Length: 287
Figure 1 (cartoon, rainbow, N blue to C red):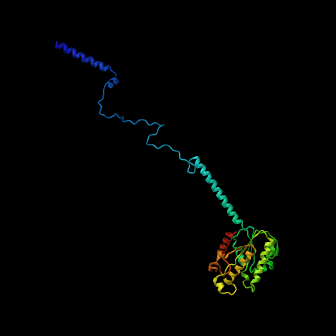
Figure 2: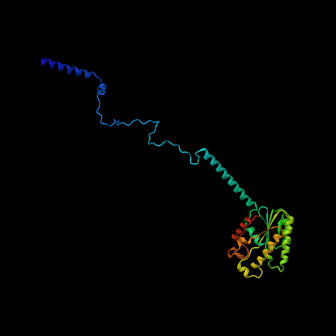
Figure 3: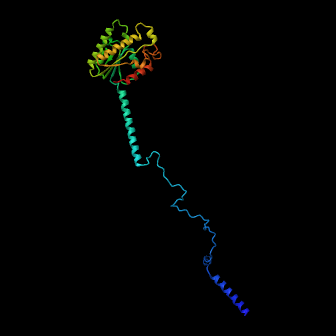
C-alpha cells in the first residue's frame, strides 16, 4: 500500500509539471503577485517628448516685435499723434525763423560810420543801408552819394524812391560839436517828418546814440558821454512828439553809460563782437 501511494504522488507531480510547461509566459507572469514595498513603480525610461507640447521648464516661443514698432493700436495712435506734433512743431519753428529773418527784408538803415560797421557785419539779412561816414541830420539832404539806378542821390531822395516797411535811424554823434542844440532838434525833427510823408505806413525807429569809451570821453570836450546822454534825451523826445518808436540801443553795448574797452579799438566804432550785440538787440525789439 505504501508503494502504491508513492507511485500515485510521483505521477501527480509529473502531470503538474507538464501543465506548467504548456502555459504561456504572460499568463505565468500575470499570476505572479509582486510584494509591495509601499512605493509606486517608476520606469527608468524617459517618456517621449511631444513636439506639440513643450515641457513646463522650456520658455515659450515669442517673436519679438521690431523696437520701433508700436505694441498696440493705442500706442500706434500715440506714436502717430506724436509724429504730427513733431511735424507741426518743426513747421512752426520754421515759420518763426523765417519771420525773424525776413523782418529786415524791407528795412532801411540810415546812419553814419557806425551804421556802416553794422552793414559790414552783415547780421541783418536783406536790410538796405544808406550809411555814410560823417553823415548828419542836415547832410542827409545835401550829400549825393547814394547810388540809385546808376545815379547818385541824397539819402532823402533815395529813401523816397523806394518803398520801405521799416526805417531805422541812428544819427547824432557827429553833431555833438554843433554850437546850437536847437539846430539839431529842428533838423532831426524835419528829417523824421519828411520820412513820414514819403512812407506814411512804415515803422520808424529812432535809435539812441552809442556812448564812447571812458578814455575817449575823458580826452574830449565834444565827444563826452554826458553830452551823448543829453542828445539821447532829445532824440527820445522827438520820437514821442512825432509818434515814432525810440530804441534805447545803448542797452545793447554799454555798461553804466560807457562803451566797454573791449567793444572798440578807437573808443567809438563797434567791433564785430559788439555789432552782434547790436543786431541781437534790434532782432528782439521789433515793436
